[in-house]
Image: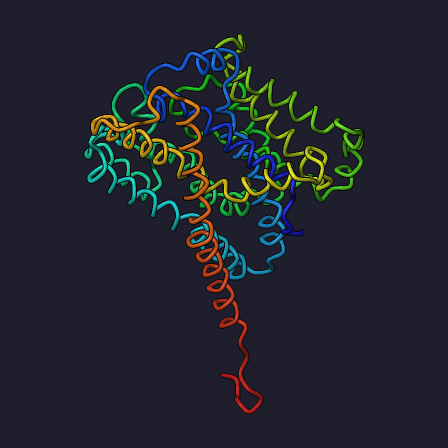
Length: 384
């Protein structure tokens, strides 16, 4: 299975993270009500970007991991490949995650005159939850009960890390029945009312992404290719229509609230299905695609950085106001530009100096471990 980057997948990553950024504007960047934002949120909520991320993760991980693990001929080889997968994921995700946990904690101590970063006690507990990968359970427990801390977005990262840890074991446990196990997982969740706890362990979008990856190697997958989207503007129109539908379903105006998350998971999987053919159905090649692909490639860092960036801008505005200096307070557009500029700068630095170097180190470590195991004695040596 090819590991080549799919441009439409990068476009979806960009849309997902931009939706999350927009969703967190009210409350994280703007503490006072912004009438326009309130009006938009009444008709469209973009928090479904998290579920789109889940569907993408399930597809991208499974399309390479399942063939690799199913191709193992011995139990030892299976666990070696599982170890390699876990190492690559750890080097890819944990350095950036831990860095921004530490920076948020430092900001809470040294850059928090306004209180934008929350209390030290809450952030200490949130940092521990982020490092130990139980942030989703803490998030559910704190929901409308107590302050979580600045790193509340880590709940979804914890859920994905738990998925990465358990998925190889799931493949080993169910083997040829994996499809049925995943379908059952999706069906049960779609038919279940989501409590706060069930919301932070929702895996239907992840499972649908995995199922899509498994289907992509079957002959029927090509027969179902949506070739009609090659027509001019057809793919973009489909992307906009599905995005608007998802945004409406995420609001309280959607009357079938019990089936909201399951429906969002299914539509997210539909977008990933269209993107998976790597035919630029959703966004034709051009300037817009390249711009969105840049955002998509930095989406992990953007997701980690946007909340501390919002809070840092709030702290800056507070200090400027107290010093009697001109500030962006009362000018939402200027505040937005300042926050987004900071996010772009910090995410690019994070990508260049943390994400890519650590990803390469992880790949190099896996390669060294593989080389050491496959090394053979020289021709003059005798075997024991």
